[in-house]
Image (cartoon, rainbow, N blue to C red; front, side, top):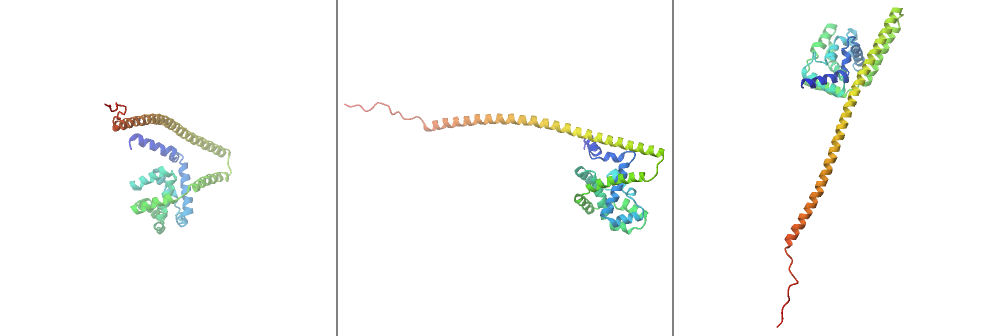
Length: 266
């Protein structure tokens, strides 16, 4: 792509696909994503989840770079390009699907390692060395998975757990003030998110209105062109009929004169 097209695609990823949220200073979205991945791992690969939990290995130890760089930090460029294609097609949940598929397909090898260092080293350094067959298998699995409802449920679950954690401990006045400030800050961020979504929606509406206007103009021009062609067709048909009449008359030749003088008698 050219520079302008590439920048527009970056804007599309950040704002319309929502990737911008995970790069904010508080990293709260990344924390939620790590929780969601952990819950998905629990649902789909319980034995692997238990093995990692036993060695106190959370997703943030190995998966944070996957989400922050869309796998570009450790995986082959060809694979990363395919991931980007799927993100443009299905949205940012593709990153969860790819991570889940990669961990699941390498589960037997991960389970062979019995300490934190070797497990993390395997996931960070050995797992990304994908062959073509493994790459295609991962991509096929991504298209078969549907986790959108689970992701929504686990995001809500994360917020509920955080609120319960705060409410379970007695708070001093300063702590209450801190809590209120954090709540206000969270609400301001939500307002900013909604404002961004509104701006994106307005941009789409303006774009659609401009497209509709262009289509209406094109439709009007096509109608005028169609009418002109119909008139031209009628004129041509009339000309053809006249020419046929002339040709028929010429082929018949002059008619004999039957009114000439008769024979004279003596």
